[in-house]
Image (tube, rainbow, N blue to C red; front, side, top):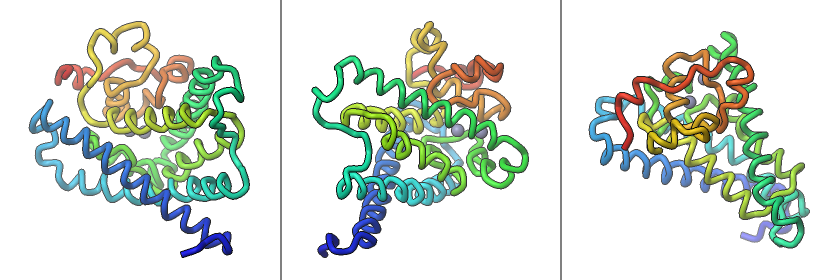
Length: 250
Ligand SMILES: [Zn+2]
Ligand SMILES: [Zn+2]
């Protein structure tokens, strides 16, 4: 069907296409790490079929919500040159490549930290965030296990950033890969990174499963997404999960 004549139809197709891609990305990434979990920690998800089915249902609903701003943006980028995404390496200095990556991750982390704290306000917790915490403990399928209100708050971050902050397409893909892999692995119930790295100076500032699992155990700490910066600054960092450590590294 030729959608070039109707902007509404073209944008709708963009949204549907993005939703399908995000749902496929979720099924592939969570599926991959669920299979890996079965190999590395056999039986870890034993008896959790009901919870996993709920995690998948909410996550697929979230895919549709993530698809909305992403699809509209993809359409606007294609047709009207919206977004500050660039593909020519010579457009900005090479040092800007890692800098833009860090800016995106830090901005996303900052948004997530403060909205996450807000979602722990009893009113918002009951209304929305309880869905995410219904995973006890979460599994690799919980990566997008969000109530639609919370999914919407997460869905607007990267689309808003690409309108404001220039980024090379390769760095944008890197951001999306990091977002996807950490979203899955931080919930899968075991630590995939070596102990030496998790307990290194670098590990002291970045968030992996050992840190986020503690949020799911205690609720009122470890709110960050990628970095421990805000948690440390605001006194909400309570270190790493002991239970997860007892399950041992891979
Ligand atoms: Zn979580
Ligand atoms: Zn939470």
